[in-house]
Length: 370
Image (cartoon, rainbow, N blue to C red; front, side, top):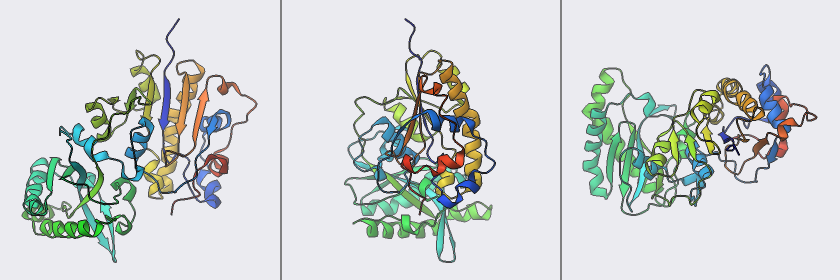
């Protein structure tokens, strides 16, 4: 008996918004999405659970799909996992990310430019971290700059902090996302002290002199200790272009591979993995929805339709996939669309136009982000 074809989960948060209901027709105008329309019409829908509309970072959504222990999804322990991927050794201590960023103020507000905008070199990164560590040691914590774009804070005890990943903050005013919780005031003061040191650093003066953005703050997030490995991860291979995937692979939780350019390339790379479950993380629409960028979202929908959804339906019909699951919600308890080869043959279910899919109130997506 031949081995079963692989199953595929497409984690594509933001694919269906949410967008304000009165704008659905305008937002969807001109977008040709026959594969998505067929998927929505013929799949079995896993209804979303009611809950908070606060969106999650992709890292937290990935951990939820792997069924990793997560006492609080808004505080997914990303830092110790990426620490492992960056060559560090997570121990019993608490770790949080402290990524170098640039905060730009504008009329009393501030917006975040993450490390991707800084072009920070390893030598500069190490020197800046060393300057800050002389101050941090007196407060009982330690900074480690394993990579120019990923720094870590090592702590002997867990601080009571509510933190937000930078991907959720991008394009939004940072004030509501600063460290909160019982120790929020303490860490905001510490960040202010570090900001003053960064402002006075000759390294930043040299960066500004050559026209580069200065590193004027750190962004804290991903606090945690290394959780236990899932007893039975819900996928065999994770396809994800993110440091989290490297960490999960280094820890031996799941096989981690870079995301191919499209589904055809993924299937070609999995020809020898019959019967496996694959999770592909498609970030094309996630950031666009969080930043309310409709144009970027439309571009993402076009790419997902062409490169992933249409080829996935064709592969399912041809028996190259045994099952397809698409998870378009911004939270793990949101709705999912599941399709088998048999359900794909439900020809009497008419394909749905995109505006109708967006407006379908039975799928469990929040009305719109605040």
